[in-house]
Amino acid sequence: MIILKLGGSLITDKTRQFRFRKSVLKRLANEIKRGAEGELIIVHGGGSFGHPVANKYRLQEGFSNKEQIEGIVLTRKVMSELSRSVINAFHERKLPVVAIQPSANITCKKGRIEDINTEVIERFLELGTIPVLFGDVVIDKDLGFCILSGDQITTFLAEKFKADRVIFAADVDGIYDRDPKKFGNAKLIPKIASTDKDILSSLKTREGDVTGGIKGKLKEIIALAEKGVPSQIINATVSGRLKKALSGEKVTGTLVV
Image (tube, rainbow, N blue to C red; front, top):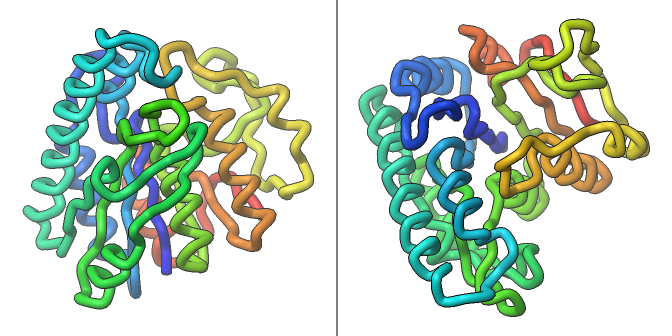
């Protein structure tokens, strides 16, 4: 089994609120269809849909006032819209995808997943479909609610289903020693071992990212690697790279083992 995480920065335009990249989604659908074999689960991020709304209402802090209820409603609304866009783009390419709403299927405790009804996902897999989940605002037993990142869903399912590997499709080549979008001399780190936790201290979270950004992502990936599931981070804006990664071919990126 492969679990594929499609980053929010990949499938949406983060410079324009509520704008998804239809042409990118169509190309990704083609590459998934050509490259994927066996069982596949897809998880996607919120990008310019979920993050701005959640950040405006400070949903990442849990329940503190009734004004946040509007934020919960709006976040659920825009994430449902994004999910429909992803599903529609994949349906156009005849991919047998089925959307699974995290807020109806997952509960958290102190911001961490406590329970997922994985039987639903397992049954859809047995039918030969591709379950699609996404980052969302979900019920939290201690905080009232919380923002659940697609990265946490991805790593939880990877451990639960004992995935062979996880692919994080992003808009950069992988993990760098500094922000490649700000520093021209940033160097790609091709391989990270789960013992290399010092690298986390050098990474910074992007402003406005309510799920921890690249630092939060790598933290989840390292924890997964410690449990024996390898992950690779690739730049899926490069045509053909996702297809090759799904097919098991060697591609530019960062491998976490």
